[in-house]
Every structure is written in C-alpha cells, then in structure tokens.
Image 1 (tube, rainbow, N blue to C red):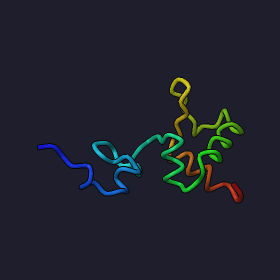
Image 2 (image 1 turned 30 degrees about the vertical axis):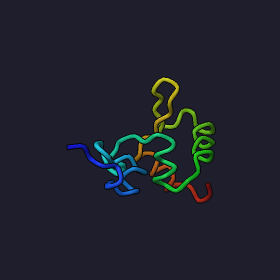
Image 3 (image 1 turned 180 degrees about the vertical axis):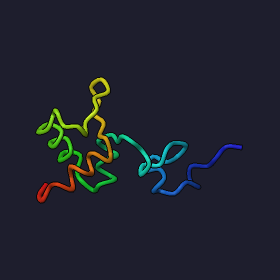
Image 4 (image 1 turned 90 degrees about the vertical axis):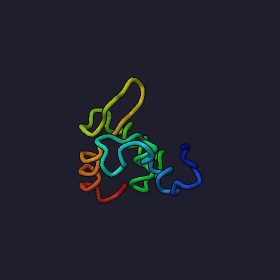
Length: 82
C-alpha cells in the first residue's frame, strides 16, 4: 500500500526523517539541514565554513560540505557572537 505524503507531518518532511535517520541522531548535517536545525541562516553557516576551512567540524564529500553535528555544537558553544 502506498503512503500518502499528506499523512506525513510538516516537521518530518522539513527535517528529512522520512525513511532515514532523524536529524537529531545524525553524525553529519548538510548546510541546509544545519541551518534548519540550529536556526542559523545558510549564508551565515557558509561564512563560518569559509572562515574556518581547517576546522575539525568539517567534512568535505567531493565539493559538498558536511558538518559533524556534535563538534559543530561545541564550536557554537564557544562563540559569544555569530
């Protein structure tokens, strides 16, 4: 039986939990996922990535930037201003 997308909650679709690992359990996040999860703009996250190219919270998958969730959270915890 096919599932109807209208039955899925908006949060499930927004955070990509449909048939995958929930966002709060993931090891890495894409920039768009991190922006939604941390309520920080994508431009701001890209700026952080550009300013810290050798940071331990970054993983490059080809030309795609992924953020290690727990290490990025530690980085954000140390900031007083974004």
